[in-house]
Image (cartoon, rainbow, N blue to C red; front, side, top):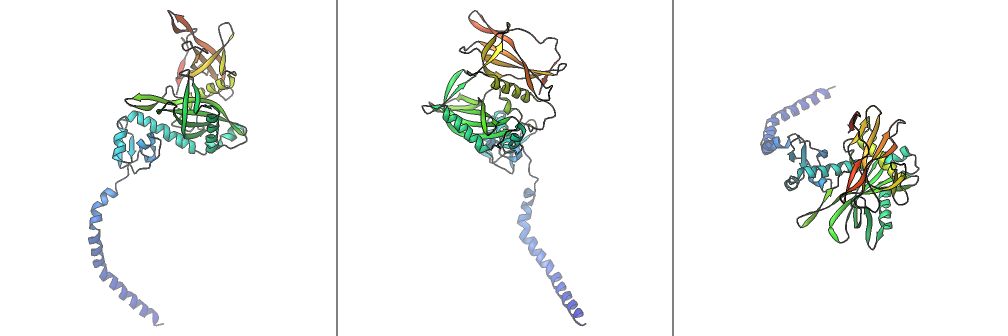
Length: 372
């Protein structure tokens, strides 16, 4: 019964001791903390929030991800903030900010789409048996390159130049999947005779049962001489798979232009003959074999009919100058975008030794709007 008062007394004594020591300890703490306290405001500053999750914008433009605290940054005229790992990278970026922003955006979006687990769910959407991975796509690219390599060079017929490119493979830069649309690999090559002339080549694959089927190969970037050096510049118009940069391809509430372009490109690939030509009927209903060159923008929508139409470039096989403007008409009546008509809009006519295009019909009087 006497232990409680004794313990209470001891506790009280200890408490008094701590109270007595507190001013001294606080003074010591204040003295030792003074230098740190002076630096505290800078350390407590609210971090800047930049584009691309604060990754170095110049790093992304060069094809690599470098995280930053965004203490080195630059604000564009539109108010967007871009972060940099060093002052040097910022200086390099500002030599051509518009082009570097586009490069950074392309790499950042492509990398994120490639990592998106939803992209790997594409097999379930298309009904094939195998769940493909980035390694499968890498292997598919290697197989295509090996099969088309002759005398140490990958031979690719560039539809825009209408010429064979003899390229040497360097590396696969990006692999990404788009649910329901396939897999896309962007690989870097260089010219067989000039290693400084680099190309970025897109490989489009679609899952087919237990294999990946090559749909098309397109040049995304080509070489351009800049003084004594060569740089890669984006080829226009860009392929449709580079257009969905702001949204996930499976989460659309309205039809987008790139989706219509995808339906057209798929139709072309699936209806080409063994020579790679698409047969398009002329005025008399006779099929004319034509080589696909590229799809134009914009995509247009007929409000009343609910139909989309897109102009494309085709070329007469064996000719450099005889171009046809072919219109593809796409409807969505079944809930799926499908090509239901193909028309020759403009045909090549030679005048004074020069090939020009003459239209067969116009769109006057139609209620048309552009599709974003």
